Image (cartoon, rainbow, N blue to C red; front, side, top):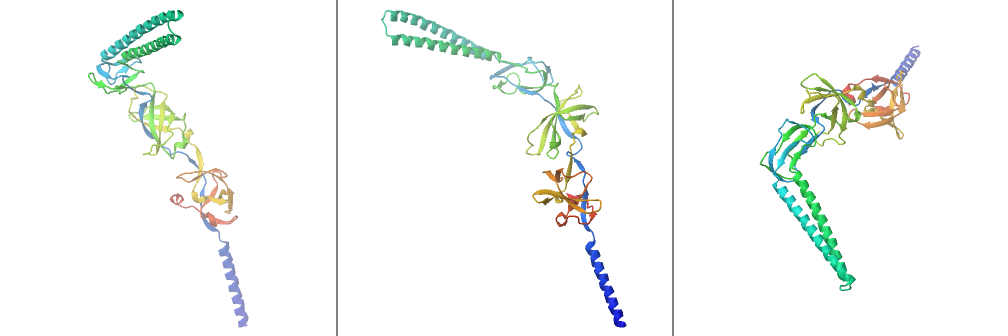
Length: 359
């Protein structure tokens, strides 16, 4: 009887051990997961910029000379064609007179060669000179005509240079800078003054490379001056095609659509873009993406806590992770770490890691 009791006890123990082992095998595997959501493609907040003019003209004389007078000062409003400064016109006037004398000399030489050619033609008709001698005088007439045309062109240039002794404003605006004074000798093309067009004010800002893809020319923005609470409407007019080599940021120009006298050049302004400009994207950690043959895939966890491999299409890789362009919907749950150990239909236990673990 004792032997039967011992056998029964051993058999019971063996059954319990096997049952416990089966329970351990069937236990769900813990898996770190995340719930898929949409992410804005730019960081919310404002960008600080500076009020600039779209047209900032640096003007100077087209010829070298000595400045005899300056008719404007910094801050003066000027109209298009208004006189800014003058050069000493004596040298230009003398050059124009010399060029005019060259024209008169060329005209006299042409008249002389034409008269000589007429006499030679008469001699040729009487067979007193050869054909080659006549052709040489015809060549002299053509040469004199070319010299006259050259002298006339040079005289026209000299006349224009006489007009270049006056520096005129090329557009209406305000004088922002003066870099020359009366008595100073300036070279051709040297900047004498700068004119800022106050009718085309803009805000220049820099946008980081991680957010530039969400912005495009024509997007609207709200502009607030740092010294007041007045808000203005702006629109992106220009986006730099290349990032600054030092800051790795892109320069943007925001055109102001409504301006008033309170906006001054050089003021600091805050720019905020409309929420309509935010492009929503699905971005998952790079550790969540695996391979299904030659295609990218993720493990999706269903409501019964079972995993299923799903093929997806990936977009660019960024600091936030990998963009999923198709195959995944917001609100679904996916495995993020340990995806290479999962099998189709496996029972798992969802564990949500700390946010910094997924980065």
